[in-house]
Image 1 (cartoon, helix red, strand yellow):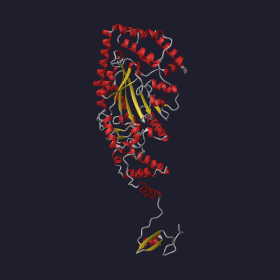
Image 2 (tube, chains in turn yellow, blue):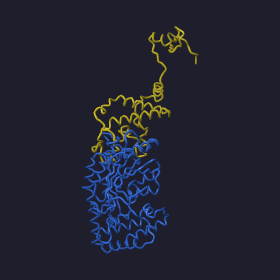
Image 3 (cartoon, chains in turn purple, yellow):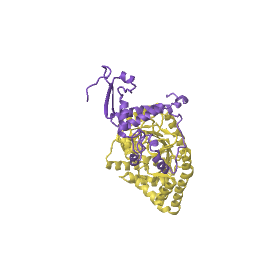
Length: 179
Length: 345
């Protein structure tokens, strides 16, 4: 690792290092932040851990950090494990495994495919959403701590999507005061 | 833990109580924002217990309600609760943090951290499914006013096992079918039940045996039909047929095999009144005969309520409760026999 280099144009430490080869000749330039900006070169500052993480994950998994159909992104249960245990891991499993679970449920429920009975009185939208966000933040922290980066990336995506959702339910349903 | 003498479901005065001992409506519910019990961490299960306790003891249901921390309860207390049909064997024997809330009159129990976060049930004597249905929904509403359930528009109430998803409701009746057993027609009932998508289970539900000629019959489908439709199917269409079937079998016995029947019921009463040692399975079998006799008007001096109470009192934990201490196996048989002699003489 070379020792810290100085900007080609001043005494400040160089943060941008560009190597180019033109006509077989290697050119190297080293610029400080100011001169790099002036030259129109992109400057990435000290990278926050999440961004490093993203890049790491994208490289490591080699695929878009999208929900894999075989594993629930919220609890990590696999469809195979469900088949073995007979129970799913969390409410989100129903969505995660919908394609394969759907026909199984239909058979077990004598043709029943969708709910047509009682529904909860309150939509539960706002409180449910808050709870889910909280849970997901905690699960994300745990996943990073346990170096389960793929799962962490999936959780981060879901979290971003959830936070970006306009909570229409919040304004509409006035959740009654809890006793 | 203080336990009353028995719950009202023991009463023999409910509708159709000659064939239907008791009935039950059970709802499976899970709290939003948590994994299901089997996938939850120890911390999460602990949180669930605290939440459930807060919600239940702060709700309209709280008056007279007792909360039992099953992790700390003695084995005998857990067995008492199973014998009274207030918790499942699964919950009693599990080794995770779990609890049950029981109403003062023992008609309502809410299990916490069984297969689902919450499993609430209402028990009543005889065939009174509309009544238990109405009451369980009041319980459900009282709880839902204070917490959010895991629910999706497509799948309904989300449960750990997809066989409970949707309404999450299970109606059950405890039927007494001694005549059908004697004339060997029980298998026909089982087959018919299977065709009608009903589960037939033993005296203590899933995984238990049908001792005392008791059969617990319940709906298996929970999705694609409303709670009212499921109730109507069971109460209006299916159960009356099974009740008629048992009545018919009893008539057949009384008319065509009267001597055989009389011999069986008098032997049963005779043994119960004079034995010095009695195992629980034998007690259940003999009491079943006597209950049949009482329903046929054969033993007018014996009260049906008494027989119903005896089914409970001969169970192991109840015997020990009565004796005031733990009993070794041999002593239990002696005590049981003494209880029966005293009650029936």
